[in-house]
Length: 262
Image (cartoon, rainbow, N blue to C red; front, top):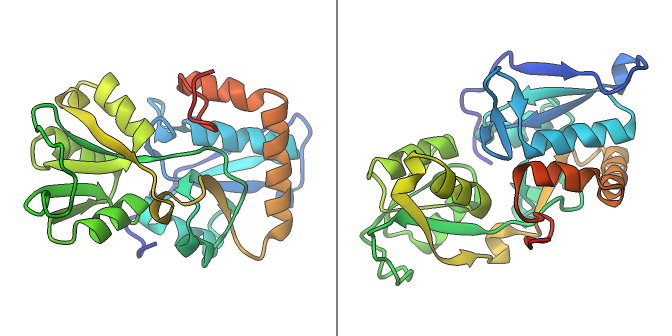
Protein backbone atom coordinates (compact mmCIF):
# COMPACT_ATOMS: atom_id res chain seq x y z
CA UNK A 1 0.00 0.00 0.00
CA UNK A 2 1.07 3.57 -0.58
CA UNK A 3 1.10 6.50 1.78
CA UNK A 4 -2.03 7.88 3.32
CA UNK A 5 -4.01 10.34 1.24
CA UNK A 6 -6.69 12.54 2.68
CA UNK A 7 -8.73 10.41 5.05
CA UNK A 8 -12.44 10.70 5.60
CA UNK A 9 -12.46 12.29 9.01
CA UNK A 10 -15.29 11.97 11.42
CA UNK A 11 -17.32 9.42 9.50
CA UNK A 12 -17.86 6.68 12.06
CA UNK A 13 -21.15 4.96 12.64
CA UNK A 14 -21.75 3.02 15.83
CA UNK A 15 -24.09 0.15 15.09
CA UNK A 16 -25.59 -1.79 17.98
CA UNK A 17 -25.96 -5.42 17.10
CA UNK A 18 -27.25 -6.75 20.40
CA UNK A 19 -29.97 -5.79 22.83
CA UNK A 20 -27.55 -6.60 25.64
CA UNK A 21 -24.98 -3.95 26.43
CA UNK A 22 -21.38 -5.05 26.17
CA UNK A 23 -18.22 -3.58 27.57
CA UNK A 24 -16.29 -1.01 25.54
CA UNK A 25 -13.50 -3.50 24.92
CA UNK A 26 -16.02 -5.77 23.16
CA UNK A 27 -16.59 -3.19 20.42
CA UNK A 28 -14.87 -3.98 17.13
CA UNK A 29 -13.95 -1.24 14.68
CA UNK A 30 -14.52 -2.18 11.06
CA UNK A 31 -12.57 -0.22 8.45
CA UNK A 32 -13.79 0.11 4.87
CA UNK A 33 -13.37 2.52 1.99
CA UNK A 34 -16.87 3.79 1.21
CA UNK A 35 -16.11 4.47 -2.47
CA UNK A 36 -16.44 1.10 -4.20
CA UNK A 37 -20.11 0.36 -4.95
CA UNK A 38 -21.85 -2.04 -4.62
CA UNK A 39 -19.30 -3.45 -2.18
CA UNK A 40 -18.85 -0.35 -0.03
CA UNK A 41 -20.17 3.17 -0.48
CA UNK A 42 -21.80 6.13 1.26
CA UNK A 43 -25.58 5.97 0.90
CA UNK A 44 -28.03 8.84 0.44
CA UNK A 45 -28.24 9.37 4.21
CA UNK A 46 -24.45 9.67 4.52
CA UNK A 47 -23.95 6.24 6.07
CA UNK A 48 -21.59 3.47 5.04
CA UNK A 49 -23.40 0.71 3.18
CA UNK A 50 -22.82 -2.13 0.72
CA UNK A 51 -22.04 -5.83 0.54
CA UNK A 52 -18.75 -5.53 2.45
CA UNK A 53 -20.41 -3.55 5.21
CA UNK A 54 -23.34 -5.95 5.55
CA UNK A 55 -21.02 -8.97 5.68
CA UNK A 56 -18.86 -7.23 8.28
CA UNK A 57 -21.86 -6.40 10.46
CA UNK A 58 -23.16 -9.97 10.13
CA UNK A 59 -19.79 -11.26 11.32
CA UNK A 60 -19.87 -8.92 14.33
CA UNK A 61 -23.37 -10.09 15.19
CA UNK A 62 -22.33 -13.74 14.92
CA UNK A 63 -19.37 -13.04 17.23
CA UNK A 64 -21.66 -11.24 19.70
CA UNK A 65 -19.78 -7.98 19.33
CA UNK A 66 -20.84 -4.40 18.72
CA UNK A 67 -19.31 -2.95 15.58
CA UNK A 68 -18.19 0.59 14.81
CA UNK A 69 -17.80 1.49 11.13
CA UNK A 70 -14.87 3.67 10.11
CA UNK A 71 -14.37 5.05 6.59
CA UNK A 72 -10.81 5.35 5.28
CA UNK A 73 -9.48 6.26 1.84
CA UNK A 74 -8.01 3.24 0.08
CA UNK A 75 -4.39 4.40 -0.06
CA UNK A 76 -4.28 4.58 3.73
CA UNK A 77 -6.36 1.53 4.57
CA UNK A 78 -3.56 -0.90 5.52
CA UNK A 79 -1.48 1.77 7.30
CA UNK A 80 -4.63 2.69 9.24
CA UNK A 81 -5.11 -0.90 10.34
CA UNK A 82 -1.49 -1.20 11.45
CA UNK A 83 -1.83 2.13 13.31
CA UNK A 84 -4.82 0.73 15.24
CA UNK A 85 -7.45 3.05 13.72
CA UNK A 86 -9.70 -0.01 13.35
CA UNK A 87 -9.50 -3.72 14.14
CA UNK A 88 -10.20 -5.31 10.77
CA UNK A 89 -10.68 -4.23 7.18
CA UNK A 90 -13.43 -5.53 4.93
CA UNK A 91 -13.08 -3.58 1.70
CA UNK A 92 -12.85 -6.03 -1.21
CA UNK A 93 -9.12 -6.51 -0.68
CA UNK A 94 -7.39 -9.18 -2.77
CA UNK A 95 -5.27 -11.59 -0.72
CA UNK A 96 -1.77 -11.23 -2.20
CA UNK A 97 1.68 -12.31 -1.08
CA UNK A 98 2.81 -8.69 -0.85
CA UNK A 99 -0.06 -7.76 1.47
CA UNK A 100 0.53 -10.87 3.60
CA UNK A 101 3.87 -9.33 4.54
CA UNK A 102 1.97 -6.52 6.29
CA UNK A 103 -1.30 -8.03 7.57
CA UNK A 104 -3.04 -11.33 8.26
CA UNK A 105 -6.08 -12.39 6.24
CA UNK A 106 -9.25 -14.31 6.93
CA UNK A 107 -10.40 -17.09 4.68
CA UNK A 108 -11.63 -15.63 1.37
CA UNK A 109 -15.18 -14.29 1.56
CA UNK A 110 -15.58 -13.99 -2.21
CA UNK A 111 -13.73 -14.62 -5.44
CA UNK A 112 -12.76 -11.91 -7.88
CA UNK A 113 -11.25 -11.18 -11.25
CA UNK A 114 -10.18 -8.00 -12.99
CA UNK A 115 -11.39 -6.78 -16.38
CA UNK A 116 -10.60 -4.26 -19.08
CA UNK A 117 -13.13 -1.56 -19.90
CA UNK A 118 -13.10 0.52 -23.09
CA UNK A 119 -15.48 2.69 -25.10
CA UNK A 120 -18.03 0.66 -27.02
CA UNK A 121 -16.56 1.68 -30.37
CA UNK A 122 -12.92 1.15 -29.35
CA UNK A 123 -12.45 -2.01 -31.40
CA UNK A 124 -9.61 -3.30 -29.21
CA UNK A 125 -8.92 -7.02 -29.67
CA UNK A 126 -5.17 -7.28 -29.13
CA UNK A 127 -4.18 -6.84 -25.47
CA UNK A 128 -0.45 -7.35 -25.88
CA UNK A 129 1.88 -4.71 -24.42
CA UNK A 130 3.10 -3.88 -27.92
CA UNK A 131 -0.40 -3.29 -29.28
CA UNK A 132 -1.41 -1.04 -26.39
CA UNK A 133 1.85 0.86 -25.81
CA UNK A 134 0.35 4.10 -27.15
CA UNK A 135 -2.88 3.85 -25.15
CA UNK A 136 -3.93 5.70 -22.00
CA UNK A 137 -4.77 3.35 -19.10
CA UNK A 138 -6.51 4.14 -15.84
CA UNK A 139 -6.76 2.30 -12.50
CA UNK A 140 -7.24 3.10 -8.84
CA UNK A 141 -3.94 3.76 -7.09
CA UNK A 142 -2.72 1.36 -4.43
CA UNK A 143 -4.64 -1.57 -5.95
CA UNK A 144 -3.67 -4.78 -7.68
CA UNK A 145 -5.19 -3.28 -10.83
CA UNK A 146 -2.63 -0.50 -10.65
CA UNK A 147 0.10 -3.10 -10.08
CA UNK A 148 -1.13 -4.98 -13.15
CA UNK A 149 -1.07 -2.09 -15.61
CA UNK A 150 2.31 -0.89 -14.30
CA UNK A 151 3.80 -4.37 -14.70
CA UNK A 152 2.26 -5.32 -18.04
CA UNK A 153 1.99 -1.97 -19.82
CA UNK A 154 4.97 0.10 -18.64
CA UNK A 155 5.25 1.91 -22.00
CA UNK A 156 1.64 3.09 -21.98
CA UNK A 157 0.35 6.37 -20.55
CA UNK A 158 -0.70 5.21 -17.07
CA UNK A 159 -2.97 7.31 -14.88
CA UNK A 160 -3.78 6.38 -11.28
CA UNK A 161 -6.74 7.70 -9.31
CA UNK A 162 -7.59 8.08 -5.64
CA UNK A 163 -10.88 6.18 -6.12
CA UNK A 164 -12.56 3.97 -8.68
CA UNK A 165 -15.25 6.62 -9.10
CA UNK A 166 -12.58 9.11 -10.23
CA UNK A 167 -11.27 6.63 -12.79
CA UNK A 168 -14.81 5.97 -14.01
CA UNK A 169 -15.38 9.68 -14.54
CA UNK A 170 -12.32 10.00 -16.76
CA UNK A 171 -13.30 6.86 -18.65
CA UNK A 172 -16.78 8.25 -19.29
CA UNK A 173 -15.38 11.61 -20.40
CA UNK A 174 -13.06 10.01 -22.96
CA UNK A 175 -9.81 10.89 -21.18
CA UNK A 176 -8.88 7.20 -20.96
CA UNK A 177 -8.63 4.56 -23.67
CA UNK A 178 -8.81 1.66 -21.24
CA UNK A 179 -9.46 1.07 -17.58
CA UNK A 180 -8.71 -1.98 -15.46
CA UNK A 181 -10.73 -2.76 -12.36
CA UNK A 182 -12.69 -5.41 -10.47
CA UNK A 183 -15.09 -7.24 -12.78
CA UNK A 184 -18.29 -7.03 -10.72
CA UNK A 185 -18.26 -3.28 -9.94
CA UNK A 186 -17.25 -2.48 -13.53
CA UNK A 187 -20.04 -4.70 -14.84
CA UNK A 188 -22.52 -2.82 -12.65
CA UNK A 189 -21.12 0.51 -13.82
CA UNK A 190 -21.26 -0.30 -17.55
CA UNK A 191 -24.68 -1.97 -17.44
CA UNK A 192 -26.59 -0.06 -14.77
CA UNK A 193 -25.41 3.57 -14.79
CA UNK A 194 -25.88 6.44 -17.21
CA UNK A 195 -22.19 7.36 -17.23
CA UNK A 196 -21.16 3.76 -17.73
CA UNK A 197 -23.32 3.35 -20.83
CA UNK A 198 -20.40 4.77 -22.80
CA UNK A 199 -18.33 1.71 -22.24
CA UNK A 200 -18.16 -2.07 -22.03
CA UNK A 201 -16.06 -4.85 -20.55
CA UNK A 202 -13.78 -6.29 -23.20
CA UNK A 203 -11.36 -9.20 -23.45
CA UNK A 204 -11.01 -12.16 -21.12
CA UNK A 205 -11.12 -11.73 -17.34
CA UNK A 206 -7.70 -11.15 -15.77
CA UNK A 207 -7.15 -14.00 -13.32
CA UNK A 208 -3.35 -14.12 -12.93
CA UNK A 209 -2.78 -15.13 -9.27
CA UNK A 210 0.13 -12.69 -9.10
CA UNK A 211 -2.44 -9.89 -9.22
CA UNK A 212 -5.78 -11.35 -8.06
CA UNK A 213 -4.20 -13.45 -5.31
CA UNK A 214 -6.14 -16.11 -3.44
CA UNK A 215 -9.52 -14.39 -3.45
CA UNK A 216 -10.84 -11.50 -1.39
CA UNK A 217 -10.23 -11.49 2.34
CA UNK A 218 -10.65 -9.56 5.55
CA UNK A 219 -7.41 -7.95 6.75
CA UNK A 220 -6.45 -8.15 10.43
CA UNK A 221 -3.30 -7.15 12.27
CA UNK A 222 -0.82 -10.04 12.28
CA UNK A 223 -0.64 -10.13 16.07
CA UNK A 224 -4.43 -10.52 16.43
CA UNK A 225 -4.52 -14.28 15.87
CA UNK A 226 -7.58 -14.77 18.09
CA UNK A 227 -9.55 -12.31 15.97
CA UNK A 228 -8.51 -14.09 12.77
CA UNK A 229 -9.84 -17.36 14.20
CA UNK A 230 -13.05 -15.74 15.43
CA UNK A 231 -13.74 -14.10 12.08
CA UNK A 232 -13.08 -17.33 10.20
CA UNK A 233 -15.45 -19.23 12.50
CA UNK A 234 -18.14 -16.55 12.12
CA UNK A 235 -17.71 -16.51 8.34
CA UNK A 236 -18.16 -20.28 8.15
CA UNK A 237 -21.31 -19.99 10.28
CA UNK A 238 -23.00 -17.25 8.23
CA UNK A 239 -22.27 -19.23 5.07
CA UNK A 240 -23.74 -22.38 6.62
CA UNK A 241 -26.86 -20.74 8.10
CA UNK A 242 -27.82 -18.82 4.95
CA UNK A 243 -27.05 -15.30 6.20
CA UNK A 244 -24.30 -14.90 3.61
CA UNK A 245 -26.64 -15.90 0.76
CA UNK A 246 -29.32 -13.45 1.95
CA UNK A 247 -26.79 -10.61 1.84
CA UNK A 248 -25.31 -11.79 -1.47
CA UNK A 249 -28.72 -11.88 -3.14
CA UNK A 250 -29.44 -8.26 -2.17
CA UNK A 251 -26.56 -7.13 -4.39
CA UNK A 252 -25.76 -9.75 -7.03
CA UNK A 253 -27.36 -12.14 -9.50
CA UNK A 254 -24.57 -14.66 -8.92
CA UNK A 255 -22.96 -16.20 -5.88
CA UNK A 256 -19.78 -14.17 -5.52
CA UNK A 257 -18.16 -16.93 -3.47
CA UNK A 258 -18.17 -19.16 -6.55
CA UNK A 259 -18.74 -16.59 -9.34
CA UNK A 260 -21.55 -18.80 -10.61
CA UNK A 261 -25.31 -18.40 -10.96
CA UNK A 262 -27.42 -20.43 -8.55
